[in-house]
Image (cartoon, rainbow, N blue to C red; front, side):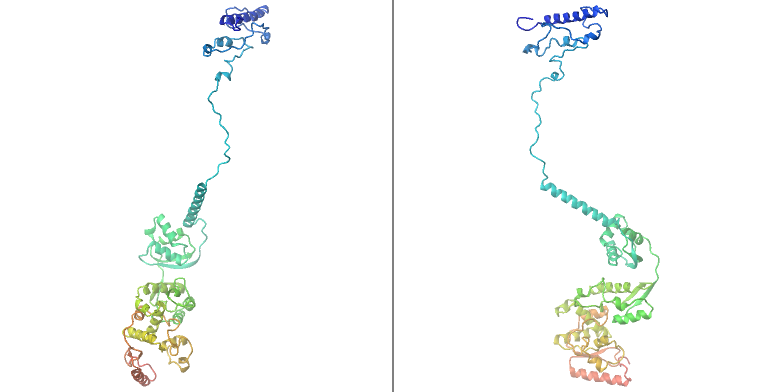
Length: 466
C-alpha cells in the first residue's frame, strides 16, 4: 500500500495477477490444467474454488474514495467483472441499487389528510334531475307503447264522422272508453305513419283496447254495417221516446239511460245541482243507428248533436234578461209545445218574457200536461189545481226542467223573442194551428169564448183545423 493509503492502478493490477497466479497454482498442483499468467480468465476450477482464498492485508481493497476526477471514470470496473466464477466482488459501481445513482430531486407523494371527498349539492341535484327525467321517459314510453296492457273487454260501437282529424278520432275513442288517451293515440298514429290512413265509418270495438289494436282496426276498411234510421220529432219527451222504442222492439230503457251521461252535464248550462234528467238536451233529428240498436249510442249521438247546435245560438239577449242557457232551453220546450207554426214561435216567446218580467204566472197548459202525462184529453179541474211545480197556473216563474226536447227553431225563438206587449194567446179557430195574441185581458176573454164555441160545435174536438 502507498503511504497515502491509496493504491495506484498498477498496484491493483499487480495484486489481481498475484491472486490469479495463486489460484492457478493450486489448480496446477491438482493436475486439472495449465494457466498462463497472461490470461484474463482462469482455467476450470474444482470444488475448492468456492472457498475464499487467504488474503493478506494487501489484497483487501479499501473502498475507493471517489474524487472529482474519478467519478465519471471508474478505473477498476472491467477488472471486477473479470473475477473468477464462484466469487464476484460487488463494488459500489456495480451494485444494482447503486447503479441508479443518487435519487436527488424526487418528491414522494404525501398522503392527503383532506378526508373523503364530499359530493356537492349541485351534483346531488343533477343526479336527482337525471333520475326524475329517466323515470319520466320510462313512464312516457310505457303509456305510449303499453307493454303491460291488459285484455280488452265488453263491446262498443263507434262511428267516426267524415273530415275528422286523428286527434278528434282519439278523443272520440277515449270518451267512449275504447282507449285511455286521445293524445297518445295521435302520437302512436304519427309514429306509425298512419295518421292519413285512418278511415271514417262505423266500427265495432271493445273497451280498453291498445293503441296498436285500434290503429289496425281503423286503418282497415270496415264491413258495411246494417243501420236503422230513427226519426225523433221535436217536442218529444223522454217518456214518449221510450215508449216509441219499446214499440219497435228495441231492447233497453231509453228513459233510464237519459238520467245522466258522460257526454254532457246539464249543470254546465246553468241547471240546478240536483237536476237528474237530460230532458231538453236530447236533440230531435233523424239518426242512423247500427243494428242492433244501442240506446246508449243513440243518446250519445243526440247529446253531441245538441252541443254542436246549441253552441251556434246567440244568447246575449237572454243573458241581458238574467236568463241562463238552461232557462232558454226551458222556454224553448214550452214554445215547442204551444206554437204550431214558425210565425207563432217568437210571439209565444214574447208572451213568456213579458209575463216573467211582470211577475205573472205563465198559465200554460203544456207544463201541466207534461207533469200528468195527459196529452190528448181535456185537463181536469184536479190537474189544473195541482200543487206540482210544473203547474204554471198557480206558480210563477219557469218550471223546474224543460217539458220536452225542442228543435233549433224553438231554441232560436226562445233566445230572440218578438218585441211585443202581448200577455195572452189562444188557438185561432180554423187557423190551421195559428194563435191569436193580445195584450188585453178583455180581448183575451172574447178570443177564448170564440174558441170554446168552435170546440163545442165540433163535439169537443179541437177547432184548430177546419
